[in-house]
Image 1 (cartoon, rainbow, N blue to C red):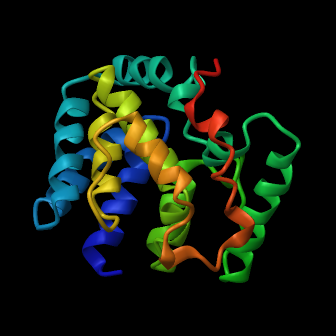
Image 2 (cartoon, helix red, strand yellow):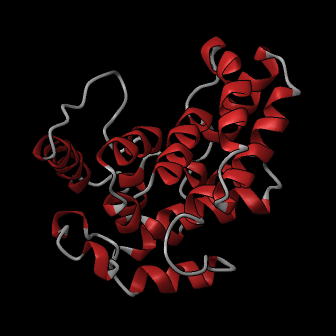
Image 3 (cartoon, rainbow, N blue to C red):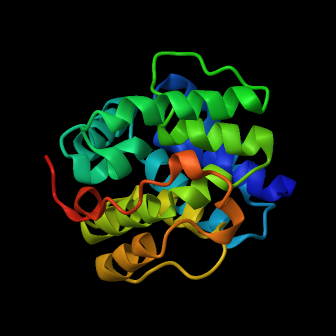
Length: 207
């Protein structure tokens, strides 16, 4: 992974975390840095940053909560898409932590280790797309769900997906077909994360 993709992931992580005063101060910094990146993912993130910059802190926070806190269809927790509310999810979360630890990162903080901003931060620091590739069907389904609602956060997910190999699926049916195909070759070694056969969790509208 080159520096440009790592920057896209760091910026995307900030965009998808709760928008506090620190993010407000960082908007022009990320925008300036991304302006020098040629990858199309950077342009998509700048679209979101431009929209976010037009909102004050309260409106930005309201938009975030309205988008992510009231429906699982917009879940930022990757194991929800693969394991839902089943008992398998606890083991999947432990495996996320073990995966971080095996690569020299101890996961801390109040969030779960499968929280997409945390996964993006890890991906940027460890210079790996393995977890993102493994969970690409979830990323694409989240992107499509946000796009269909004409939600500004769709640009962030589109920017993330643009960094991964091959075209993004055009609709939910194509994203489900991607899930049925199993993990991509680049991440075949991550067997503990391969729960993509649980298609009802990927296709249902669990609220």
